[in-house]
Image 1 (cartoon, rainbow, N blue to C red):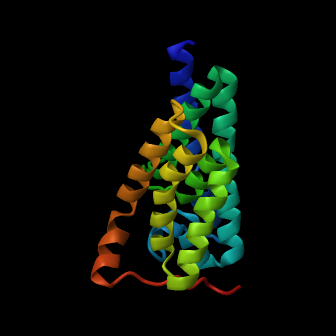
Image 2: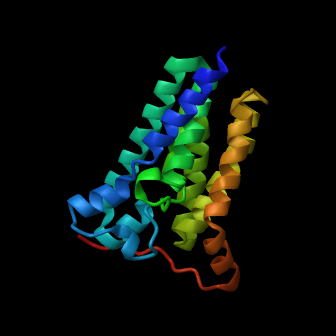
Image 3: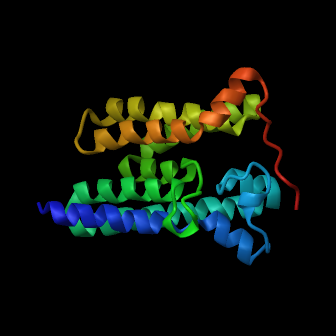
Length: 200
């Protein structure tokens, strides 16, 4: 397999991931940059907090579509390894988008799409963790952190240590936890805000 095609898959994934649905949607439909409101994060949660649940779900869907596109293109270029490279590129692009000053989201919506690409059963497990934690605590950040934490264990239990997927399910949580470092600090000192979506 050509390493060149794998690199191309990762680069294409990054370019696709850099398409910030949150920024585009809020600028075009709601005439405001979501990065200047709420938590300042260009992700589905902040969009829902500022512009309503409908806008949040649109952002989530758009982020998943771009990630699935990166996976599909990567697979066409270099098979499973290309798909993994495309997915990794997509989450890097989402968090650090080239087109928007490298200020993007925290990777949860992309992580959901990655789980779906690797094993739909893992998606159900991680999504269940997220929903249960958020319903109990109202902290989306805590739900996100714990849901992502469940990904490696769920994948390894279901599929073993398949490569290169195993590297991806280890790397993605580390990146997502890094992006949530501010939330983790606020959760620990009790200043994290609970999620209250704007009603439309």
